[in-house]
Structures are given as C-alpha cells and as structure tokens.
Amino acid sequence: MDSKEIIEAGRAVLGIEFGSTRIKAVLNDNAGRPIAQGSHEWENRLENGVWTYTLEDIWTGLQDCYADLQRDVREKYGAQIRNLAAIGFSAMMHGYMVFDRDGSLMVPFRTWRNTMTAEAAEELTKLFQFNIPQRWSIAHLYQAILNGEEHVARIDYLTTLAGYIHWKMTGRRVIGVGEASGMFPIDSTTKYYNRRMLNLFDERIASHHYPWKTEEILPGVLTAGENAGTLTEAGAKLLDVSGTLQPGCPLCPPEGDAGTGMVATNSVAQRTGNVSAGTSVFAMVVLEKPLAKVHPELDIVTTPDGADVAMVHCNNCTSDLNAWVGLFRELLEMYQIPVDMNTLYEKLYTNAMNGARDGGGLLAYNYFSGEPVTGFSEGRPLFVRRPDAKMNLADFMRVHLYSSLAALKSGLDILLKEEKVGVDRVTGHGGLFKTKGVGQSILAAAMNTPVTVMKTAGEGGAWGIALLAGYMIDKKPDQSLAQFLGQKIFAGNAGETVSPDPADVRGFDDFMKVYTAGLAIEQAAVDAMPLA
Image 1 (cartoon, rainbow, N blue to C red):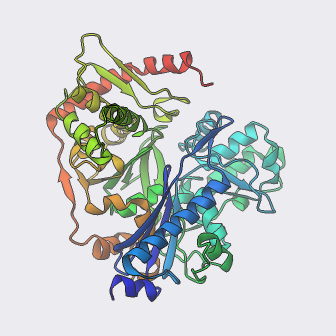
Image 2 (tube, rainbow, N blue to C red):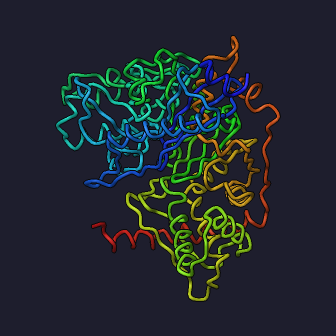
Image 3 (spheres, helix red, strand yellow):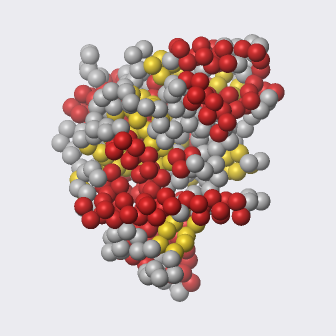
C-alpha cells in the first residue's frame, strides 16, 4: 500500500509531543516511516513567578497542530484522516497538574522549568535515600504541603501534561512507566511506584490528615506495548475540531520526552545512551546495575519498558545560543542582507570549530532559568572574558557551544568517571545537532565517547511516541521493545558517528575548570540583578 492508501484505510499511526517551544505531530505508515507532519509554535509564560502554560494554550495548540497535520495530508496525498490504527501522546516530563473531583485544574500548571521546590526535593532525597529532583511531581506536591497550600486537601488527581492529555482523550488515568518515573520513584522489578517510598511519604504527611493516600491520586502505570485505552468520541472532537476523526482507535501509554527520545534514537538497551539537546538538555544511559551512591546531579528514571536509566537533566541548553544568533541576524538585516537562519546557524557553528579548544579565555553561562545540577535556583545569561583574551567570532561561538553542554558535562563526569558506568553507543538528537558534525564533536569531547546522529533524529519525540503506538499494535509475541526497534525500525540505519578528538577532550576539560571556578560570577549576577 502507498501512503495515501494507508491513510485512507485507517492504518496510519499518529504521535504527538508537546515540547517546550513546539507541539509536533508525526504520522507514520505501517512500517514506522513518517509520511506527514504538523506543528504549532508555543512558549511558556512566567506568571506570578511560575513557569506555566494555560489550558487554553494546551488545547488550542494541540488542535492547531493536528489541523496543520491534516493540511499536510491533504496537500501531499489529497486525503483526509478519518480513522487511525493507533495514537500516542507525549510531553515534557515532570511538573504539577492537580485536579479536584470535578476535574477542574486547581492551580496553574507548574512545569519542569520551575525551581521552587528546593526544600521539598532535599527533604525527600534524605527520606527516600534516592535523588528527588526539584522538577519531579512528588517534589512539587510536597512543597505545596510544606507551603500550607489550601488546594492540597482537595486533590483528586495529580498528573503530568502527557497524562492530562491522555486522560481527556480516553477517560483513563494512566501513564507510561518512563513518564511515571519522573513523578515518583519506580521499582524496576515491579515496574510500579516504589512501595517502600509510597509508605514513607504517606507516613511523613500523616499529621495533615488528608483524605487521600498518595497512590490514590497518582496515575496508574503501564509499560510499553500495553493498551492504554481507546479514543473516545469526546476525545476525538477535542483533537480534531473539524469532526472528521472517528473515535475507537487504541492509545499507547503516554510517555515523557525522555522516553520518546530513547525510542527515537534506538537507545532502550543496556549500555546505550542518548542526549537530547534543545531548549533544555538531558543525557540518558541505560544501566546494567544500580549506581553505588545517591548523587543529586543524577536522576534514576526508566525506559518505556521499565529498565533503570541514569539521567542528567539541565534546564538550559540552546536558548542563550539562539539569542546570540538572533543578534547576528539583526545586524545582517540592518545592512539589508537576506538572512536564511539555517545557513546562519551552519556558518556560525562551523566556524566555531576553528576556535581555541579551551575557549581562549572567554566564559559564558546560558542560565535563562535556574540550573539545579550546578546549584542555581535562578539564572542570568552571562558572558565574561579576560582582558587579554582574543575577542573573535570562532572563540565566541565555541564557548557558547561549550556552555550549552557544560552543566550537562558536570553531571556526566560523575556518571562516567566516578560511577564508571559503561556506555557503548551515544546518539544525539535535537536542534544542537542540526549542523552536521559540530554539535556531535562538542558532545563527543564532553563525554569522551563516540556520538552518532541518525537521519531520523530530526523527527524527534513525536516520532518516538508514534513508534511506541506502533509497537503496541504490531509487536510479535514476546518481542521486546529493543528487539522491535532493532529489527523493524532501525535495521540498516547506523547513522553517522563522530569520535572524540583527544585535543577537543582536553580543551573542554580545561574550559570546565574555568567554568566551575566562574560559577561564583554567575551567582554574583543573580544576586546583583534581581528579577523585576
């Protein structure tokens, strides 16, 4: 069957992911190949000190994204999507969405980007003897309890953005195990919330006499391949305002962007890893055994099929880099020089590889928001240099590329050098890797490990969740997720690999010494420039 026939026969599979700056839809054929796409640009808001998206942002964004997909289908194939074989939803992990018994959102959605839960995260890490980052849902819940927030006693359901969308599409309060592992610690043997820690948390808050137990307000947990419900009539109308889409197709468990990134890069097997670099950046390595110690810089989450993964998550990656590229565009436009942004990025990034390997005495911090990995609850983008440093474009761009991965490298050094975790293959995906070879080389230097980028890396998490939906309906008996990806999706797709240049490795390590010492400068900027 060709693509048009697959769409008209209702055999296409849809994946939609809510990223930080874009909602993206990918429609796959029955072999897992993308055949149509749609997108919607959006941006989080800082309201009353909280990074958030409104419910209107969420639903108008989703509907516009799906309508854009429908336009792409009409233009390419002269067809309409009426039925689908399966759907999957994904979104930024973590955060805090709480609803009362009437299904009303009780406080504005608190996204992963907020760094307001330091007290809760520290207390829970000690209680569980397990690292609880600030962005995790349980940290947000406990901080609300510590703050004495009135709404807590009325919570009926606590979920994530992906869990919320799935609930409205199917009526089911469930999420995938990978997404669940960013809400509350998971026991990888049971692939469910850690029972010991659930009991510890309930004991810790018992004096408040809330009318719920923690397990009762959390979503149910499912693993990759399980059926997570079917699209209801109300859900179909929410997704497709034209009323063309018919209800009844199955949905896979909703997953977070970490899980879909692992799937999209074929990194769900032990000793594989991936780095997703966009507005935020995170690295994930599937573990062979538990870590020896608890590290606040390292999160333990899971793959979509429940295997333990060490994760380094940083709130900031390319936002400051993008702002500087925008400044150069403004200069060119002032001289009435036509600017193609893809070409501008390519020129600037490629030229960066001519810069001094240690940064040449320049230093940058890309902290638009707080960066818990390096101990910051707030951030101030910052550029500083020694007076004897050469101020040239190559060094400037190289240092900003280093800065985009520097906080990540500080966590990865603990994982790879201190814990001595083995990794055979790392795959990069996201905007940082669009310019061929550059982001790869910088990451390879940071990790001292070969880095692969696949041609499909640009498809991102929307493709990853579509693959998970395809796995649910197409997997063979006893076929693992890793086997499905290796045998059906990535067979023959090795990608392009860049090995670390020893001189770049030494240069990045030298830069990190300056970067680490200079954190005091960043703290001074936070102290001296309070937010309005």
